[in-house]
Image (cartoon, rainbow, N blue to C red; front, side, top):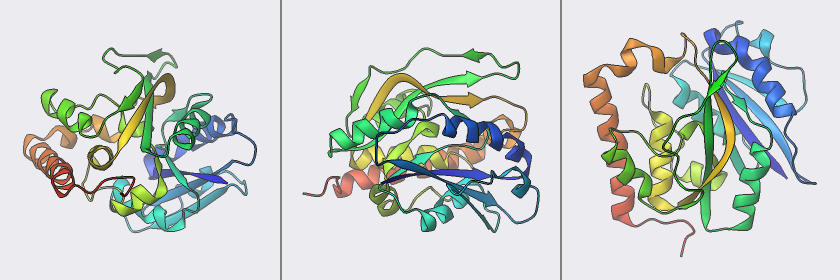
Length: 249
C-alpha cells in the first residue's frame, strides 16, 4: 500500500530537492506501506532534472508552466495510492510525520485529512515556532473557514502539511487555479466537506528563503490578494451550502 508524496518544483527551488529527499528517506512506515515521491516540474527544461534522485520510488514529470497548483493537479494523474501528502520542494518532513498522519486516517474513516505543527527553517539552519496552534485532535467541518475569516485570512492549521485521502482531493478538483493561496483553497474545501485532524507534533520544517513565492511583492498585492481570498471563500461556502459531505451518506 502506498502514500503518494506530491512535490511541485521550478528551477529556483530545485537545489533544495536533496534535502526534501533525505527527509523522506528518514520516514518510517508500518509494514506493507511505502511512499512514492512524485516530483512535478512547473515548466519544461533541464534545470530541475539534475537534482532528482535516482531512486525507483521517485517519479519525475514535467508540464507547461502554470504555478504550483497547476503542477500538483497535473501530478494527480500519476498518483496510485490511497493517500496524498504535500511536500513543497524547499521544505522538509519532520521524523515520523508520514506515519503519524497515516495512523490518524487509517484509524478513523470519517476523517478526510490531517495536518500538523510547523517550524520555520531559517537560513542559518535554526528553527522557530509560532504561537496559535489549535488543540490537537479533530478539526470539525467548517472550523477552518470560520477561523480564517476572523484572523485576516490565516488558517489555524498549515496547508503545506496536508495529508489527505486521494479520492477527496480528486473529487474537489485538486488545487485551485490561482497564482498563490491554491493550497489554502484546497484546505478550506476539504474542511467544507469533511472533518480533519491536527497533530501537535512537528510535521514540517518550512524553509524561509528570499526566493520563496510568499516573500515576493506580488504575493501581497492588495487587489490580487482580495481576489484570491474571495474565490477561496466562495468555493468553501458553496461546498458547505450544497451539503456535499465525506464520507458519503
